[in-house]
Image (tube, rainbow, N blue to C red; front, side):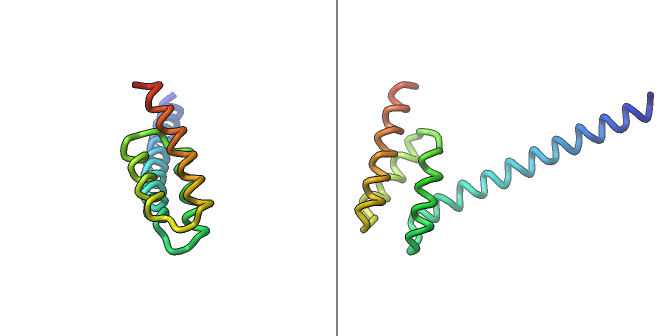
Length: 96
């Protein structure tokens, strides 16, 4: 029984450590995508918009996308960001 308890404890500890590492990686990826939104490379900006489309509707994200729309020179990316802003604003209004 003692051996089974030890294995279970180690498995739980490993799962907790993996969860903590995953949380750190996710947080890093979110920060990276926010930076890539203003990248000089079109593909990175497009990927960052894809990430933002899946992000939670928050005032910070909406304002970031509005800044992006004002900064972006390509109409296609501005239009995509505007659609995302509209969805986020509707989501934010529903939860308020």
